[in-house]
Length: 294
Image 1 (cartoon, rainbow, N blue to C red):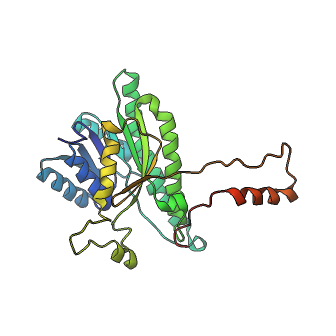
Image 2: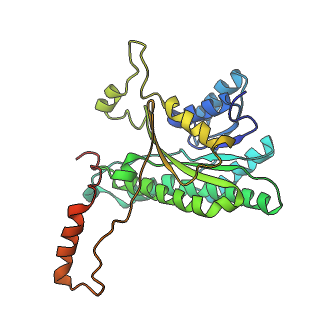
Image 3: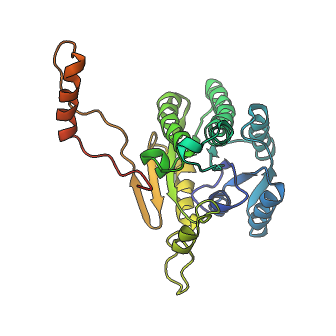
């Protein structure tokens, strides 16, 4: 028995890395999991791992950048398991370039997988939950999105990725504000963990390697998955609209953009005077966190 008993969750990009860890941990906590990945063999391997230990899971190969295909994933989860209670938007990619070298294709591909991918699956899930709510049925829907430090702070060489992840953080706030009336919460995780993407850089691979002395594996993706499982559970019903950082044994709330007191002249600022007002505001503002890579 676990905190996700009777829950049915879709995890996108679950054929490896964080997504696979999310699927395994969710299943270990009692959830029925739809393991989505365009790499069918990878998804099947994760499903086999889950079912071999008595868990419930099925393979899905829907393209989460395609709206109709995403709808098929939602329909499959409902058809096989009888319900849908959560979506973990995890699928991602990267095409790292300095902005001056970034092509249109580099931009479109990353925005499509991350930002549109978050929209497509969630849209179909929310339509199902809204329909259930209007029928008078109890709804306990969970959207768990995936942003990153790049989206919250910026990251040199990752303009496309940072823009997509920032968009996901803003999307989460809107979803939380709009969907509570239907019994749906929306939160985003900001994970730091060992995955194929994070270890593609040799220095990061060395930093994130499994410790050889048997000590706590700080960068194990399962550390993040515990947060995801709780957010997918009934217990998280009161938490929505949050961006939650998860790394190793640390859990924290990412505090977003906030307006300062500012300087109100009471009339229009002349262009020549704007600089003085901004200098005064900047002098008292809390400095932004440093951009990754600077």
